[in-house]
Amino acid sequence: MDFDFSPVQKEIQHQARRLLSERCDLRAVRRVLDDGRLWDEALWRQVAELGWLGAAIPEAYGGLGLGGDTLAVIAEELGRALAPLPLVASIYLAAPCVLHAGSEAQRREWLPPLAAGERVATLAAAEGLVGLSEPSRHAASVRDGRLSGVKQPVPDGLLADWAVVSARDEAGVTGLYIVDLQGPGVTREALASIDPTRPVARVAFDGAPALHLEGQPDGRVVLDRVLDEAAVWIAFEQVGGAEAALALSVDYARIRHAFGRPIGSFQGIKHKLADMYTRNQLARANACCGAWALTADAGELPLAAASARVAACEAAEFAAKETIQTHGGIGATWEADPHLFYRRARSLQCLLDGPAVWRERLVSALAARVGA
Image (tube, rainbow, N blue to C red; front, side, top):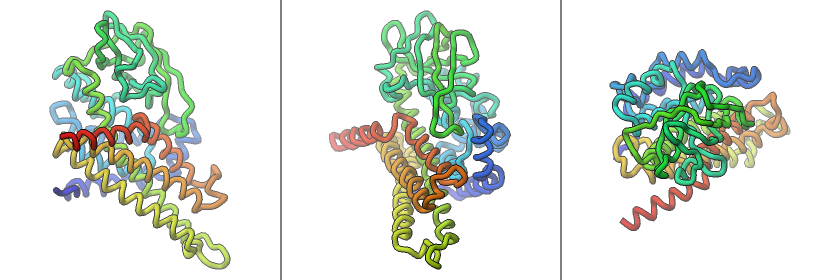
């Protein structure tokens, strides 16, 4: 069993890192944050032209058909750069919903614009405390092709053109529906977010026209698969961010002097950096296992995805916190960069219902394996 990436995938990752280092350094992220913009539209167009958005979308639907593991190496570099782009909503969540739940005609209609970056989509499933993994408890409903209900938080809900929405029909069956977010019966408002470069919104539907995704009648099955896939890709973003935070800490520990010597020479700082590195490597190992399961063994995906999600959440948050501590008093200021990593770590941690839910999914997957 080989969890390593192919030479082609490593080259794609190398090129992605080089481009993002030139186009999306921390100063570029700050400009988006300071200007109050929702995303970097110029960078979005560029990554679309390079085919990154369609990496995991089959060629028949406008993508490159390179597989989910190739998207994973791209996700790691996007996380390393803290890229202010709506990939989580559009590519990790909405596109797989259409791919797994849509009919052939619906896939051919809705996926190509996502792969080309011409449209941005999102998944509107969470209803406050009732998260993505509990669709049977969702109050949103569809009657005669009209959807009513409230979804929050919706990732990139303000800039998305359309959304895949979970709702129950007249028979109480959970399904997935495509709704035009710029159409009638839809109201959107921004929600406060710890990371404004990955904004979230509250979206209310009042009799909005809804198109049922007809390929899979049980929306719960699709949501479980989509959550597992997205957990792996987000884990790679978290690993990339955690490694960038470690690199920032190491660089600062080399140049910052106290009592006539670099602070990196002190045991307390060494231990912080070593602990960050250890957690990052554990998270990477679990994420690579998840990437393998994406394409090699779908039966292993629930366990691998949950493991990747839990390990990556812990590593990213720990790295972000310790980066602030390594920088000392300046680490908590707006002028310093550590808060950018903390914002992103917390933002990604809160997506897909948070670590607590994924620990439960991990235990359930392990129990199922023991039972089998």
